[in-house]
Length: 130
Image (cartoon, rainbow, N blue to C red; front, side, top):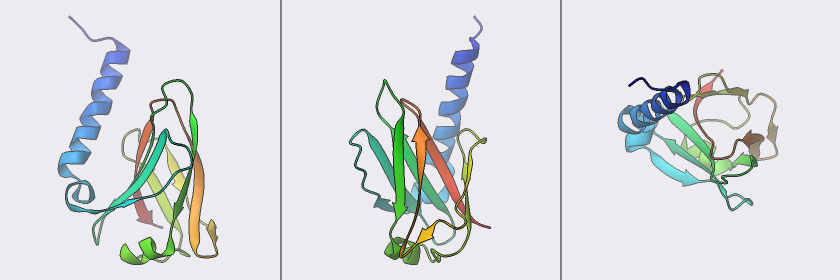
């Protein structure tokens, strides 16, 4: 039989996720840094190589969206060989419709932002210098 639209969307989502985890250099070989969260049902972390950087943000709450605060400490910018005071674009590799411009969000030594993540939702952002 044919798949419903919802089934096709789910299949496409997992196809993209599997492709990222198998072939993206930062996901395969990158260093890992957890970004602590106050919300116990949310997670944020970095995976990066010298040339490619991923930021993963997920909400494990089945019932409601979560507001996730993403703050990247100065030492992590240094490890990624980037400067926190530069402008960066985050492009979601799963949905391809979500982009976050990190321009002007540097405060003191931490650059950060907040994002609403749907119930059981996730974003896998590629961090790119503008």
